[in-house]
Length: 204
Ligand SMILES: CC(C)(COP(=O)(O)OP(=O)(O)OC[C@H]1O[C@@H](n2cnc3c(N)ncnc32)[C@H](O)[C@@H]1OP(=O)(O)O)[C@@H](O)C(=O)NCCC(=O)NCCS
Picture 1 (cartoon, rainbow, N blue to C red):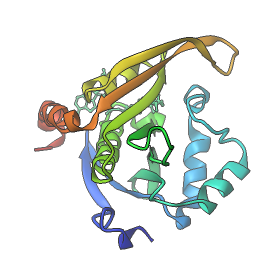
Picture 2 (picture 1 turned 180 degrees about the vertical axis):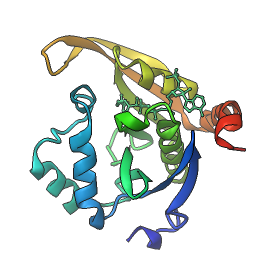
Picture 3 (picture 1 turned 120 degrees about the vertical axis):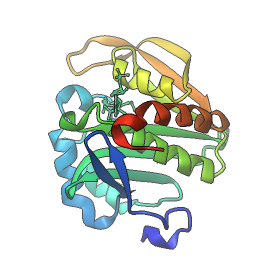
């Protein structure tokens, strides 16, 4: 259970978004059905950016059977008990880059542009810093402009662009952007971002 981990003991946490608030907490075993529903509801174009084919039930069985917050931390945003956003801190130790954490974020279509993505990214960063990671990486495609803007606002920059590296569900090739951010810079940028949003969502 996540509450036994001091770094996660403050969850669940209520966070304001534009015109409402969400509850953020780590994914746990009891969320199986809700999580499946969330991923099933994503538009086809958003599913493309996930590493796994979430139309396959065995993907969820695998995720839940290997739930280990010290390696991969899945955080979720709930609105009225329904999952509306999911983020992953992938900090699985790799021998040649143990200091690098990868983050992924996806938000349901109905809740986009209400700050849910930024809220989840902020929580994931908090955890990455708490775990001692020195660098964050996010992978997006050239056509994922909202994702690129979100990460850029947080201080990420495109460090590499791999030409024609990914294919979308229709077989069209796109460039893969490897965006990175030194973690110590993140909180400065976040402060500025929250100041921009505060008149609408009441962040301080
Ligand atoms: C990228 C993604 C996670 C962003 O989620 P989101 O919840 O829409 O993100 P936010 O609401 O924090 O920010 C989106 C926009 O809303 C605006 N916004 C959010 N809250 C606001 C507020 N209170 N007042 C004014 N504007 C606000 C932001 O400025 C931003 O504007 P921009 O796109 O013009 O730059 C989402 O688009 C998504 O799921 N995409 C598909 C998956 C993906 O690409 N993931 C990234 C790769 S891992």
